[in-house]
Amino acid sequence: NNFGQEWQVTNADPVLFHKAGSIQYPEKCKIPENAYTSTADMIKHIRGTAEGERLYEMAKKVCTKATGSHTQDCIFDVMVTKRLDLAAEYQEGMDNGGWNIEAPKKVAHK
Image (cartoon, rainbow, N blue to C red; front, side, top):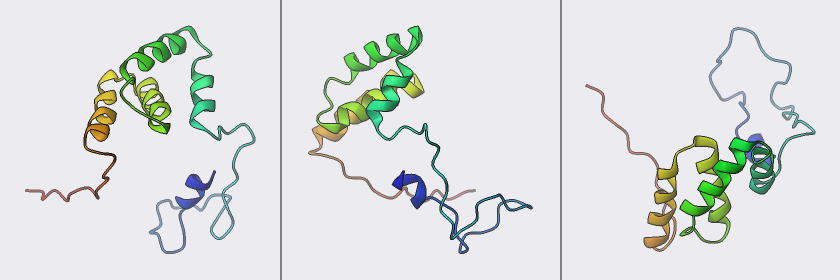
């Protein structure tokens, strides 16, 4: 998907491994044929198990305050992390008039 392609390592990035992999920039990464292309597809896949269905029902209950596409994002985040408290982040975002995403603050190490 496009998001994955944006994160591909380029020649400007530092070398992470001793040996180069099979695909190197500028060649694009290959997206698997069975890759999920939407949050809804990923949720549907996770729901395929008894635990997944249980998580889905719990996530739906805690994500009721999220609106629009944020509802699916909230449900997905809760399901994959198994953290019901993540739904509060979506509530806070809505209470503050939407999402105001800032760059992470640098922490000084002592």
